[in-house]
Image (cartoon, rainbow, N blue to C red; front, side):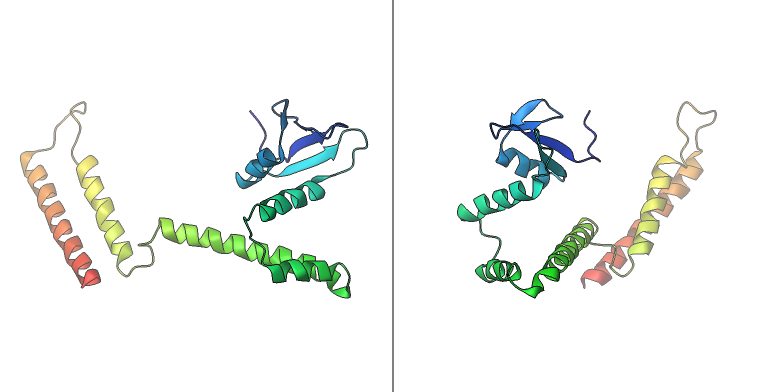
Length: 180
């Protein structure tokens, strides 16, 4: 099993072929792009010299996607990047870009969390959640299972059922208030 906490080491041979050291096979730039999209960090090194080539290959991946019409970077941004290499702004641009992408990633993460739990911010959510827990508890915990010593009495089952009906009615009333 691969250790995904460490960067995936890709070695570039003299023939310019790229070798995945985890799977012991050759990979393409598209494979490397897929690893990155899947959340994997990669490090690409020259086998002979040991030079880190990651930056140049990542730039090549971006250039290939841009040339295929998969434009992510607006022309103005590309122009500003070229300018940053020839001006004193060069020292500010990398930090600005890194912070911008960090903010974008954090925003996406928060958006996904909210999308997965859309009701958390709704008024009355905690009460609804408590009623749901009580309902599940009544359905699973209060009635003894047949393997236990003594089954729940009919009177206890009737009380539990009445409690559930009451909680369900309260829940329906709260939902009606929220929707109405």
